[in-house]
Amino acid sequence: MYTKMLKIRQFETRAMNLFAEGQIPGFVHLYIGEEAVATGACSNLKEDDYITSTHRGHGHIIAKGGDLNFMMAELFGRETGYCKGKGGSMHIADATKGILGANGIVGAGQNIAVGAGLAAQYKGTDQVCVCFFGDGATNQSTFHEGLNLASIWKLPVVFVCENNGYGISLSQAKHQSVTDISVRAVSYNIPGVTVDGNDVFAVYEAVGEAVVRARKGQGPSLIECKTYRWRGHFEGDPTTYRPAGELEQWKKKDPLPRMEKYVFENNVMTKEEVEKLKDDVDKMVEDAVNFALESKKPSMSSAVEDVYTDIVEEARLR
Image 1: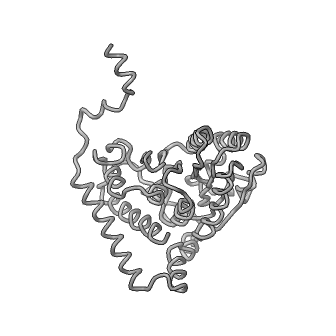
Image 2: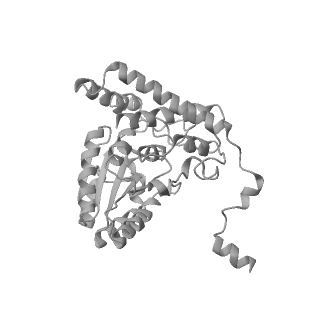
Image 3: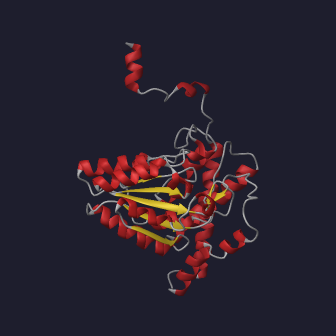
């Protein structure tokens, strides 16, 4: 889990710098500070389990086993990227690993997750789907529709709210009358729990219980993870809406040093081993950047590929 969090942090830091240099096109929404949520949640999942992601999705994809090379190539808009360079930062997907897609539409993942849960139930597998979303998405109708239907049909979906305190630039206190989003689970007669989203073990345990429950056919759960994004809503966001000193207070709760303290105190790793791991991860990220830079840009003709399904194309040709 420490390695996963480190990969997310180093990947995102590199992406931040590359975007600032003008090498990455489009928008970039970084996950720095929230690493414990994706890591703790996805550490409970098997390769054939599903996740649905958000516009701030790099961390989810890395935690579920996404390839750093293909991810970085997608950020650069290269043809070797996960979506052939057409999706960019907000639309990375890998169906072979159960990653059903990051999504630029707020609240769009809930109903996709319900579909994945319904498919697993229909096929009789023990697969589950973890649906990631932010606090702002819980005001969308899709949140309520998704929880309601999953509850009625007892679908194997774990709804994980990454409450970083802000829906874009609006604090949670200004867009909701509840302090803990998990209380909304009561409306759908499902378990709801709030945990420290910067404590990877707290997230792991809470999501683990929900995953076990889902695999047994006992239905969905809502897990709220209180965390904080260090960067703005998007790169370039001046974050003038944040109170002075708030970021500094949250940095004291950084999930990575907390995990480092644990591995040292419990003799899991030595300081030398941790430093070597950091160097190894740095190299992985640098290799991913080089892979992206050495990859070709999509051809002009590819702009009209993947627009229609083969069935539609064959019908048109006939």
